[in-house]
Image (cartoon, rainbow, N blue to C red; front, side, top):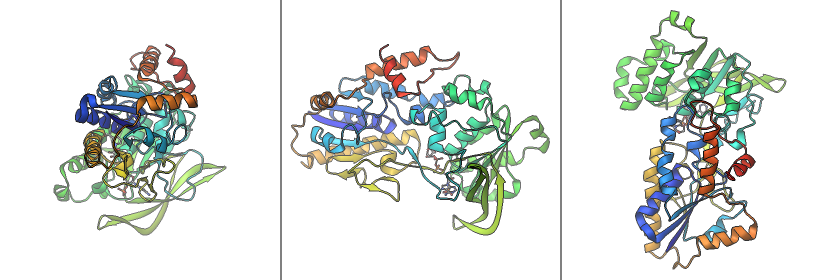
Length: 440
Ligand code: NAP
C-alpha cells in the first residue's frame, strides 16, 4: 500500500489525487489536507462568483473525494498543527498543492494606504474567504484604479461594475453584495504598463465587458497598433485585441446610457500611490513605450485620481517552514515538481500563478508520474509507512478537530439551505460558523 499526503484541496490537489487513483487503484491511500474546514481552494474562493459554470468543476473533485481511497482532512494547517517533516514520516510521498494565495507586492510608495487592496484580498473578500471577510472596502468615491491587464483585473472590474440584479444566480457573499450595492463608482481605470498587444486577458472574459447593464468599456483608438499587426498574434490574443478594437469603435453617444465607464489606460506604469489622512487619493503613473516587448518609461508623468485601488499583478505561494522556497519566483524551489526526496509540489505552488484551472490536470498527472518513478527507483524508502492510522493517532494526541468530507457535505447543505433566492449557496465566511454547521 502506498500512502500519499496532498497539502491543499484546490484543483491541483484534487487532480493529483485523481491521478494517484488512476496510477495505483486500490493500492493507494490519499489524504487531502486543507487549513479550512471546506474544500476546493481556488474554486471556492478564487473563481469569480458570477462564473458558476467554471465552479462546476468541483463536482469532478467530489467524485474523487468520495472514493474509498481518498479522504479530505479539513481544518488542519500543515506547518502549524502538523509539520511537513511529520507528514513525511507518515506518508511515502507528500505533495504541496497550496496554490499562490498571497499578493505580489508592487513595492511602490503608498502601497499601504487605506482602500488599496491586493487582488488576493479583494477577490477573497467577495468570495467569502474567512481571512478577508472583514476587508470592508469603501466604494463611496467615484474612481477605482485596477492595476494589471490579466483575467483577475477583469474579474475585479466586472464585479465592481455589476448591479445587484446582475449577480442573480451567483454565489457572491451577502457582505460583498451589500457593500457593492452602495457603490458610487463612475469610473474604473484599468491600468496596463504595456500595450493592447501585450494584455493577458482572454477573449471570453474580455467580451463580457460588452454585456454589462450599467458599465461600458472605453479604449482610446490611438493606443491600438495598426490593424495589420494583429495577424502576427497568436489566435487567442488576436481575438482579445478584436474586442479592444470593438470597444474603441463605440460611439461617444453610447456612454450617456451608462453610469460607469471602464477606461483602459495602456502604456501606463504605476510609480506611486498618493493619499492623505492614510487613504489613497491618486495613482502617479509614468507613460511608457514598448521596446522589444518591455515597458520603458518615457519620463512623462501624470496622476489619476483614485478613491480605491486594486492591484491585480499576480500572486505568490506561501512558504512552509523548512521547505525550500524560491523567494524571487514566489514559489517552492523545485525541479519539475521534485523538492526533496519524497516531497513534491504541483500547480501554482510548482509553476507560479499561470494557466487555467484545466492546466492543473496534466500537472497533477505529471507529479504522480514522478512519484511512481521515484518509488520504482527505490528513492522513497521501502514502504512500511503508517499513512492514515498514523495521522489519526497524531491528530488525536494533538487534539486536532479534523473536518471530514462527510462534515463538509453537512456544511454545504446548510450553505445551500440559507442561499438567497436563485443563488446556489450562501457561504459561511467564519471558520467557527463552518465548524458549527457540520453538526447539521
Ligand atoms: P496575469 O495573467 O499574469 O496578469 C498580471 C498582469 O499584471 C499583467 O498584465 C502584468 O503586466 C501586470 N503586472 C505585473 N506586475 C506589474 C507591475 N509591477 N506594475 C504594473 N503591472 C504589472 O495574472 P492574473 O490576472 O493574476 O491571473 C493569474 C492566472 O489566473 C492567469 O493564468 C489567468 O489567466 C488565470 N485566471 C483565469 C480566469 C478565467 O479564466 N476566467 C480568471 C482569473 C484568473 P505585464 O504583462 O506587463 O507583466
